[in-house]
Image (cartoon, rainbow, N blue to C red):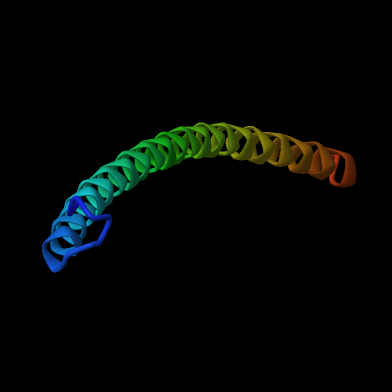
Length: 91
C-alpha cells in the first residue's frame, strides 16, 4: 500500500491476485474433500449391496430347501389320503 494511506491500482491488483490464488486453493481443497466423501459413500453402498446380495442368496437357498421339504410332505400326505380313501387299492 502507498505510504499516504491511499490505495493504488497496483495495490488492488495485488489484492485481487492474492484472493484469486486463495480462492483457487480453497476450491481445490473443496473438490478433494467432495471426492473423498464420494469415495466413502460409494464404498459404503457397495458394502451394503454385497451384504444384501449375500443375505438374499442365503434366503433363496433356504427357501429352496423348504420347498423341497414341503413337496415331500405333500406327497406323503397324498399317499396317506389315497390309503384312507381307497383301502383296497394296491399302492
